[in-house]
Image 1 (cartoon, helix red, strand yellow):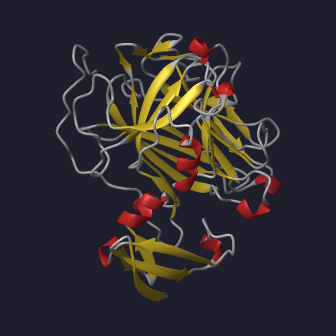
Image 2: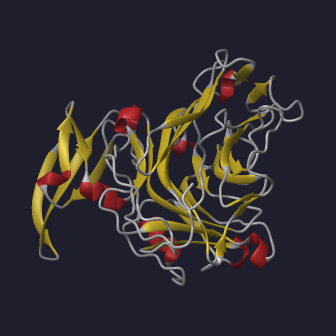
Length: 374
C-alpha cells in the first residue's frame, strides 16, 4: 500500500493504492488493484492487512471494503432531485453502473430520487447520521403502463463481471412503505424488486428473483394482506425455468417454484421503517438457500423466511453445475404493477454477515400525523 497527500478544494486528501487478491475484486477492472480517495485517516482502518474504508468510501457509493467483503454500499447522502434531468448521471457518479428514471425516460413509469423528507413522517431517518433517503416512486397506474425504472449494478454482457453479485451474498437495507396523504401504495402480484441476470435484460439467466406483494406461496398461496395489499407487503422468491429449480412441495401446488414468508406476524408494514436482511447461497448444485429477516425501527430481528434445500421440510433448490455461482448484474426495482411510494436508507451488499452495518437500539420515531404504526 502506498499513500500520497495533497490538497484539493482546501481539504487534506489522501489517495490509497490498494492491492488485493483478484478473488475479491469487485470494483476493479484490472482484477487486483483499485485507487480510493479518502478525506482523513479516520476514514479507514486496517483489518488483516487489508484496508476497510469507512466514511469517504460510502460517499463514493461502495462503502467499507474488507478483502472485497463489501460489494456495494450507498447511503444516498447526495442530492438527486425528482425533477433533475441529470439524476441518472448523479447515481452513476455514486457507483451505480446505470439508472433509468422518469426524469429522462418517459417509458420508465417511475421516479428515482433522493429526498430529505418523507410525507407524514416526523422522526429521524434510521441510517447512520442520515439526512437523505432514496425515494422509489412507481407510477404504472398513473402513467399508464408497467414500469421499467431501476438502478443497476454490473453489466450482463461482460464476462469481467462474472460473480459481481456473489453466489453467497448478503443484502441489507432500511425500507419505508408509504400509505399516507396522496401517496397510497398498493402491491399487487408479480412485482419484481431484485432482478439479477447473467446476460443482458430482459433475461431468463437468473438463479433467483426477489419480488414483493401480497402472496406468500405457503401454505397454499396464503394472502394475509389481501390482493392487492394496501401499503404493505411480503417478500417472495422465484427462479428462472431451466436455470434453477426451486421446488416447494408443501406449498401452493400451482406455484411450487416460488416461496415467500413463513412468519405470520412480521413483514414490511405501512408507515414504518423496517430493516431488511437477506442471505442467498447458490454456490452448489443442491442445498441452495434463501433466508430473510426484518427488524422494525426500534425493535428486534424476526426471521421471516428460511428456505434451505434439503433442510426446510418439503423444499429443494437445485442448480445445474454449469450455472452454479453468482450474477453479473442487478437491477432494483424492475417491473411494478401498482402505484407505490417506497423510501430506502443505507443499501448494502456484502459477502459476509459480519460486514453488514449494525445499528444501535433507538427509540421509535414519531408516527406519521393521523396514521397509526402497526
